[in-house]
Length: 508
Image (cartoon, rainbow, N blue to C red):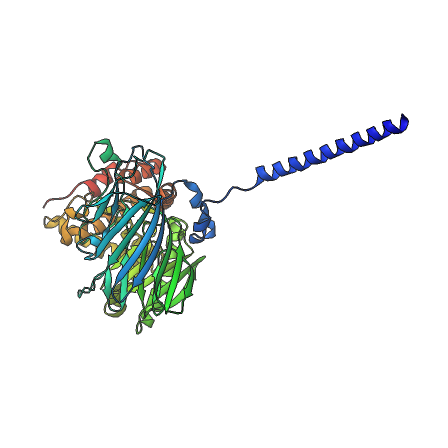
């Protein structure tokens, strides 16, 4: 009996110990499962932002996402493309039909974009061209409710022109092929139009030829492009890699943080020099023979980037590119990339600094703080223009800044007022005509921001601009957003200044 009882006791003790050990293993396994970090939904895009700016991705759960695969033939100026786009209805209205813009089909782009198919989960969706072929209407299988997401796949082709005029934003000229917005872009949903029960509550405006082209919302991008290895490509986003194949083709891969649009420019003749501005790598791309002005462009861009970061807040990307382009004496902004006309590198070098400084400012006023450049172009152009005054005061001295204010802004605005050419600033670009556009949308709008600065003082003015960037970063603003923020922070009414410079005009 004693031996038997001890055996059973030993067996019971061993069983209890085994159960305790098993329970401990289960507990530890449970802790591991519960403590396991969740997958990072934005992991593929974090390299597109500087380390201190990567938290921007975590501010939203509904970023639109584009994945592009492009086969490019620079000789024929053609693209065969496919894209996946993930979109979330971030409005208060249910979406019926969806609209995508086809910007290459704009008359002043003079290109041709064709859509071969639109699919969802491998099933074709009906679509039709709209807005004079500058958009397509897509019928999803069911309406997209607020907060719901939808993934679409599009197959498309693009043909770019080879114009003979000196200004070529889209197409080939002087050994450079510019390809901005060469993919279908989801149009901007207009909640005010939806509230008014308008039949098409999507923004399908035809932009003026002398203003900016596209009203787009910030999105995340992953892009793969294959083209001949003799070409150097400069593109928005961050280059992840470039691989070569035996058939003389290179495949380039980029990713991005939030950007307003994706573009690429390519040439077999690009040269590049680089420097740093704080933690940002600045690159200047130029053609053979332009080495002196290419290096000058680099130093100007780096200086502007430092000044604007000091006054407006952190630049979010790890790199910024300044690229010579067939834009004659003009410039054009894109996220992290500014095109500067070749004429400024060669004939009008005295204007190179001003154009670069203006375009770099657009990284804050257009890309980070977005607005409608077709209906309210003064919001970004006025601040980008006024930023040149900020830059000159910091780099060249106050006398140089005041000279700019007097000669570039006050003189033409005074002339306009004395000769019946003044106009309300807060109007669409199409309201001005090419002759008055720059005077009103650039110069008069810049004088509004100068008047605000004089009213609230320097310290408060730059506090307002930093808060403006923080509050509306990668969102879209209306004029009232700036005014109300400035009034709230300064404690001053700006109604009289806003009325004088933005809402009124003088008749002689």
